[in-house]
Amino acid sequence: MYDERYENGINGNSLIFENENKTEKAYITRMITENHIPGYLDCSVVYTDGSERYVYDITSRSNLESMYEYDEIGYDALCDILNSLALALESAEEYLLPAEHLMLDPHYIYSIPGSGRMMYCYYPGAYSALSESMNEIAEFILQKADHTDDAATMLAYDFYKQVTDGDYTIRRLLDRAETMIENDTEEDECLKHVVIEDDELYPPDEDMAPVIPAAGRIIMAVCIALLVMISGFVLFAELKPYGMAAGLMVYKEMKILICSSSAMSVLLPILIALKWLGESKQYKEKLNEYDNDRSAELFYLG
Image 1: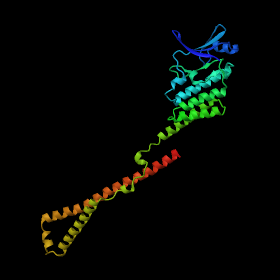
Image 2 (image 1 turned 180 degrees about the vertical axis):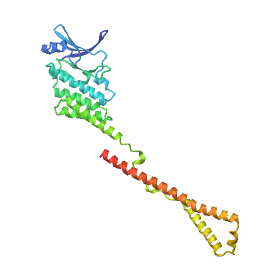
Image 3 (image 1 turned 90 degrees about the vertical axis):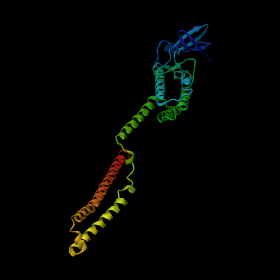
Protein backbone atom coordinates (compact mmCIF):
# COMPACT_ATOMS: atom_id res chain seq x y z
CA MET A 1 0.00 0.00 0.00
CA TYR A 2 1.05 3.59 -0.45
CA ASP A 3 0.03 7.06 0.70
CA GLU A 4 -0.81 9.82 -1.73
CA ARG A 5 -0.35 13.53 -1.08
CA TYR A 6 0.36 16.80 -2.84
CA GLU A 7 2.94 19.46 -2.14
CA ASN A 8 2.87 23.07 -3.32
CA GLY A 9 6.17 24.89 -2.99
CA ILE A 10 8.14 27.75 -4.45
CA ASN A 11 9.70 25.34 -6.93
CA GLY A 12 6.37 23.99 -8.19
CA ASN A 13 3.70 21.46 -7.42
CA SER A 14 4.25 17.76 -6.85
CA LEU A 15 2.27 14.56 -6.63
CA ILE A 16 3.87 12.23 -4.08
CA PHE A 17 3.41 8.51 -3.47
CA GLU A 18 5.06 7.23 -0.29
CA ASN A 19 5.77 3.59 0.62
CA GLU A 20 6.74 2.41 4.06
CA ASN A 21 8.83 -0.31 2.43
CA LYS A 22 11.05 0.06 -0.59
CA THR A 23 9.81 -1.49 -3.79
CA GLU A 24 11.81 -4.41 -5.08
CA LYS A 25 11.71 -3.11 -8.65
CA ALA A 26 15.09 -1.37 -8.79
CA TYR A 27 15.32 -1.62 -12.57
CA ILE A 28 11.97 0.12 -13.03
CA THR A 29 12.86 2.84 -10.54
CA ARG A 30 16.14 3.62 -12.28
CA MET A 31 14.46 3.62 -15.67
CA ILE A 32 11.73 6.16 -14.77
CA THR A 33 14.01 8.42 -12.72
CA GLU A 34 17.04 8.50 -15.02
CA ASN A 35 15.15 9.01 -18.29
CA HIS A 36 12.69 11.51 -19.70
CA ILE A 37 10.28 8.91 -21.02
CA PRO A 38 7.89 10.21 -23.71
CA GLY A 39 4.37 10.53 -22.35
CA TYR A 40 5.35 10.10 -18.68
CA LEU A 41 5.53 12.61 -15.85
CA ASP A 42 9.08 13.30 -14.70
CA CYS A 43 9.80 11.34 -11.53
CA SER A 44 12.35 11.46 -8.74
CA VAL A 45 12.73 9.21 -5.68
CA VAL A 46 13.57 10.29 -2.14
CA TYR A 47 14.57 7.69 0.49
CA THR A 48 14.03 8.50 4.18
CA ASP A 49 14.11 6.18 7.19
CA GLY A 50 13.56 3.03 5.21
CA SER A 51 10.63 4.46 3.23
CA GLU A 52 10.62 5.90 -0.26
CA ARG A 53 8.77 8.76 -1.89
CA TYR A 54 8.08 8.95 -5.61
CA VAL A 55 7.75 12.60 -6.53
CA TYR A 56 6.08 13.64 -9.82
CA ASP A 57 6.21 17.17 -11.17
CA ILE A 58 2.68 18.43 -11.92
CA THR A 59 3.44 22.16 -11.95
CA SER A 60 0.83 24.19 -13.92
CA ARG A 61 -0.98 21.01 -14.93
CA SER A 62 -4.56 19.85 -14.44
CA ASN A 63 -5.65 16.25 -14.30
CA LEU A 64 -8.10 14.83 -16.80
CA GLU A 65 -10.77 14.28 -14.16
CA SER A 66 -10.92 17.95 -13.13
CA MET A 67 -10.63 19.21 -16.72
CA TYR A 68 -13.82 17.43 -17.75
CA GLU A 69 -15.74 17.57 -14.50
CA TYR A 70 -18.27 19.89 -16.12
CA ASP A 71 -17.17 19.87 -19.76
CA GLU A 72 -17.45 17.27 -22.49
CA ILE A 73 -14.68 15.83 -24.65
CA GLY A 74 -14.85 16.87 -28.30
CA TYR A 75 -13.36 14.98 -31.22
CA ASP A 76 -10.03 16.86 -31.35
CA ALA A 77 -9.49 16.59 -27.59
CA LEU A 78 -10.36 12.89 -27.70
CA CYS A 79 -7.78 12.33 -30.44
CA ASP A 80 -5.18 14.10 -28.24
CA ILE A 81 -6.02 11.84 -25.29
CA LEU A 82 -5.87 8.65 -27.34
CA ASN A 83 -2.65 9.68 -29.09
CA SER A 84 -1.06 10.35 -25.70
CA LEU A 85 -2.33 7.02 -24.38
CA ALA A 86 -0.89 5.22 -27.39
CA LEU A 87 2.45 6.95 -26.78
CA ALA A 88 2.41 5.92 -23.10
CA LEU A 89 1.82 2.27 -24.00
CA GLU A 90 4.50 2.40 -26.69
CA SER A 91 6.97 3.92 -24.21
CA ALA A 92 6.28 1.13 -21.72
CA GLU A 93 7.16 -1.41 -24.40
CA GLU A 94 10.22 0.50 -25.60
CA TYR A 95 11.68 0.92 -22.10
CA LEU A 96 10.73 -2.61 -21.00
CA LEU A 97 8.33 -1.31 -18.35
CA PRO A 98 5.36 -3.50 -17.33
CA ALA A 99 2.19 -1.69 -18.40
CA GLU A 100 0.47 -2.85 -15.20
CA HIS A 101 2.18 -0.01 -13.28
CA LEU A 102 0.87 2.66 -15.66
CA MET A 103 -1.86 4.58 -13.82
CA LEU A 104 -4.75 5.14 -16.23
CA ASP A 105 -7.13 6.58 -13.65
CA PRO A 106 -8.15 10.04 -15.06
CA HIS A 107 -7.21 11.49 -11.67
CA TYR A 108 -3.52 10.75 -12.44
CA ILE A 109 -3.45 11.81 -16.10
CA TYR A 110 -2.20 15.38 -16.49
CA SER A 111 -2.34 17.79 -19.42
CA ILE A 112 0.48 19.91 -20.77
CA PRO A 113 -0.92 23.47 -20.94
CA GLY A 114 -1.60 24.70 -24.46
CA SER A 115 -0.48 21.51 -26.19
CA GLY A 116 -3.43 19.14 -25.83
CA ARG A 117 -0.97 16.37 -24.87
CA MET A 118 -1.44 14.22 -21.78
CA MET A 119 1.26 13.00 -19.40
CA TYR A 120 0.81 9.70 -17.55
CA CYS A 121 1.94 8.67 -14.12
CA TYR A 122 4.03 5.50 -13.99
CA TYR A 123 4.38 4.28 -10.39
CA PRO A 124 6.02 0.92 -9.54
CA GLY A 125 4.09 0.72 -6.25
CA ALA A 126 0.72 0.62 -8.05
CA TYR A 127 -0.54 -2.41 -9.88
CA SER A 128 -3.60 -2.95 -12.06
CA ALA A 129 -4.18 -5.46 -14.83
CA LEU A 130 -3.95 -3.68 -18.15
CA SER A 131 -7.48 -4.81 -19.09
CA GLU A 132 -8.87 -3.23 -15.89
CA SER A 133 -7.06 0.10 -16.26
CA MET A 134 -7.90 0.33 -19.97
CA ASN A 135 -11.56 -0.35 -19.19
CA GLU A 136 -11.45 2.45 -16.63
CA ILE A 137 -10.19 5.06 -19.07
CA ALA A 138 -12.52 3.78 -21.82
CA GLU A 139 -15.56 4.10 -19.56
CA PHE A 140 -14.51 7.63 -18.58
CA ILE A 141 -14.12 8.65 -22.22
CA LEU A 142 -17.45 7.10 -23.20
CA GLN A 143 -19.21 8.94 -20.38
CA LYS A 144 -17.56 12.32 -21.01
CA ALA A 145 -17.56 12.33 -24.83
CA ASP A 146 -19.55 15.12 -26.45
CA HIS A 147 -22.55 13.16 -27.73
CA THR A 148 -23.64 16.11 -29.88
CA ASP A 149 -20.43 15.60 -31.86
CA ASP A 150 -20.97 12.61 -34.14
CA ALA A 151 -17.25 12.09 -34.77
CA ALA A 152 -16.42 12.19 -31.05
CA THR A 153 -19.30 9.85 -30.19
CA MET A 154 -18.32 7.30 -32.83
CA LEU A 155 -14.64 7.35 -31.82
CA ALA A 156 -15.52 6.97 -28.10
CA TYR A 157 -17.80 3.99 -28.79
CA ASP A 158 -15.24 2.39 -31.13
CA PHE A 159 -12.51 2.78 -28.50
CA TYR A 160 -14.71 1.32 -25.77
CA LYS A 161 -15.68 -1.66 -27.92
CA GLN A 162 -12.07 -2.26 -28.95
CA VAL A 163 -10.90 -2.19 -25.33
CA THR A 164 -13.63 -4.55 -24.14
CA ASP A 165 -12.53 -6.93 -26.92
CA GLY A 166 -8.98 -6.83 -25.54
CA ASP A 167 -7.59 -4.93 -28.54
CA TYR A 168 -5.31 -2.03 -27.55
CA THR A 169 -4.10 -1.03 -31.03
CA ILE A 170 -5.05 2.61 -30.57
CA ARG A 171 -3.03 3.89 -33.53
CA ARG A 172 -5.03 1.78 -35.96
CA LEU A 173 -8.27 3.00 -34.38
CA LEU A 174 -7.19 6.62 -34.85
CA ASP A 175 -6.11 5.95 -38.44
CA ARG A 176 -9.53 4.49 -39.23
CA ALA A 177 -11.29 7.45 -37.62
CA GLU A 178 -9.12 9.92 -39.54
CA THR A 179 -9.82 8.09 -42.82
CA MET A 180 -13.55 8.28 -42.18
CA ILE A 181 -13.33 12.01 -41.45
CA GLU A 182 -11.31 12.60 -44.62
CA ASN A 183 -13.80 10.60 -46.71
CA ASP A 184 -16.70 12.59 -45.29
CA THR A 185 -14.82 15.82 -46.01
CA GLU A 186 -14.12 14.78 -49.60
CA GLU A 187 -17.77 13.87 -50.10
CA ASP A 188 -18.83 17.26 -48.73
CA GLU A 189 -16.39 18.98 -51.10
CA CYS A 190 -17.87 17.07 -54.06
CA LEU A 191 -21.37 18.05 -53.04
CA LYS A 192 -20.33 21.70 -52.90
CA HIS A 193 -19.85 21.60 -56.66
CA VAL A 194 -23.50 20.67 -57.13
CA VAL A 195 -25.26 23.95 -56.47
CA ILE A 196 -28.99 23.37 -56.34
CA GLU A 197 -31.04 26.46 -55.54
CA ASP A 198 -34.22 26.12 -53.50
CA ASP A 199 -36.44 26.81 -56.50
CA GLU A 200 -34.66 24.09 -58.46
CA LEU A 201 -35.32 21.39 -55.92
CA TYR A 202 -38.90 21.18 -57.10
CA PRO A 203 -40.38 21.22 -60.59
CA PRO A 204 -42.20 24.40 -61.65
CA ASP A 205 -45.79 24.32 -60.44
CA GLU A 206 -48.15 23.29 -63.21
CA ASP A 207 -50.68 25.74 -61.82
CA MET A 208 -48.17 28.49 -62.59
CA ALA A 209 -48.06 27.60 -66.29
CA PRO A 210 -48.61 30.83 -68.28
CA VAL A 211 -52.12 31.49 -69.55
CA ILE A 212 -53.79 34.50 -71.17
CA PRO A 213 -55.48 36.36 -68.29
CA ALA A 214 -59.22 36.98 -68.27
CA ALA A 215 -58.74 40.69 -68.99
CA GLY A 216 -56.58 39.82 -71.97
CA ARG A 217 -59.17 37.39 -73.30
CA ILE A 218 -61.90 40.05 -72.95
CA ILE A 219 -59.76 42.60 -74.81
CA MET A 220 -59.10 40.10 -77.58
CA ALA A 221 -62.80 39.29 -77.84
CA VAL A 222 -63.75 42.99 -77.99
CA CYS A 223 -61.08 43.63 -80.62
CA ILE A 224 -62.30 40.74 -82.76
CA ALA A 225 -65.92 41.91 -82.43
CA LEU A 226 -64.90 45.46 -83.32
CA LEU A 227 -62.93 44.21 -86.30
CA VAL A 228 -65.95 42.21 -87.50
CA MET A 229 -68.19 45.25 -87.12
CA ILE A 230 -65.79 47.50 -89.04
CA SER A 231 -65.42 44.90 -91.79
CA GLY A 232 -69.20 44.60 -92.03
CA PHE A 233 -69.61 48.38 -92.13
CA VAL A 234 -67.07 48.76 -94.97
CA LEU A 235 -68.57 45.85 -96.90
CA PHE A 236 -72.06 47.29 -96.52
CA ALA A 237 -70.82 50.68 -97.82
CA GLU A 238 -69.32 48.98 -100.86
CA LEU A 239 -72.46 46.99 -101.65
CA LYS A 240 -74.81 49.95 -101.26
CA PRO A 241 -73.05 53.03 -102.60
CA TYR A 242 -76.11 55.23 -101.95
CA GLY A 243 -76.77 54.01 -98.43
CA MET A 244 -76.03 55.68 -95.11
CA ALA A 245 -72.79 53.69 -94.61
CA ALA A 246 -71.49 54.84 -97.98
CA GLY A 247 -72.44 58.40 -97.12
CA LEU A 248 -70.45 58.26 -93.87
CA MET A 249 -67.43 56.86 -95.65
CA VAL A 250 -67.19 60.10 -97.60
CA TYR A 251 -65.96 61.91 -94.48
CA LYS A 252 -62.21 61.93 -93.78
CA GLU A 253 -62.77 61.64 -90.03
CA MET A 254 -64.74 58.41 -90.54
CA LYS A 255 -61.95 56.90 -92.61
CA ILE A 256 -59.39 57.81 -89.90
CA LEU A 257 -61.63 56.32 -87.21
CA ILE A 258 -62.10 53.11 -89.16
CA CYS A 259 -58.36 52.75 -89.90
CA SER A 260 -57.24 53.44 -86.34
CA SER A 261 -59.90 51.14 -84.87
CA SER A 262 -58.94 48.38 -87.29
CA ALA A 263 -55.24 48.77 -86.48
CA MET A 264 -55.93 48.68 -82.75
CA SER A 265 -58.20 45.66 -83.11
CA VAL A 266 -55.42 43.78 -84.91
CA LEU A 267 -52.44 45.00 -82.86
CA LEU A 268 -53.78 44.40 -79.31
CA PRO A 269 -54.52 40.66 -79.79
CA ILE A 270 -51.10 40.23 -81.42
CA LEU A 271 -49.33 41.87 -78.44
CA ILE A 272 -51.28 39.76 -75.94
CA ALA A 273 -50.49 36.58 -77.88
CA LEU A 274 -46.75 37.47 -78.09
CA LYS A 275 -46.59 38.08 -74.33
CA TRP A 276 -48.20 34.69 -73.67
CA LEU A 277 -45.80 32.95 -76.08
CA GLY A 278 -42.79 34.54 -74.32
CA GLU A 279 -43.96 33.40 -70.87
CA SER A 280 -44.64 29.92 -72.21
CA LYS A 281 -41.09 29.74 -73.55
CA GLN A 282 -39.63 30.75 -70.15
CA TYR A 283 -41.77 28.13 -68.39
CA LYS A 284 -40.52 25.39 -70.72
CA GLU A 285 -36.91 26.50 -70.10
CA LYS A 286 -37.45 26.17 -66.33
CA LEU A 287 -38.82 22.68 -66.83
CA ASN A 288 -35.74 21.73 -68.84
CA GLU A 289 -33.40 23.24 -66.21
CA TYR A 290 -35.15 21.29 -63.46
CA ASP A 291 -34.80 18.04 -65.41
CA ASN A 292 -31.07 18.70 -65.97
CA ASP A 293 -30.38 19.70 -62.34
CA ARG A 294 -32.32 16.73 -61.01
CA SER A 295 -30.27 14.40 -63.19
CA ALA A 296 -27.04 15.98 -61.92
CA GLU A 297 -28.19 15.68 -58.29
CA LEU A 298 -28.99 11.99 -58.71
CA PHE A 299 -25.62 11.42 -60.38
CA TYR A 300 -23.59 13.00 -57.54
CA LEU A 301 -25.65 11.68 -54.67
CA GLY A 302 -26.37 8.25 -56.10
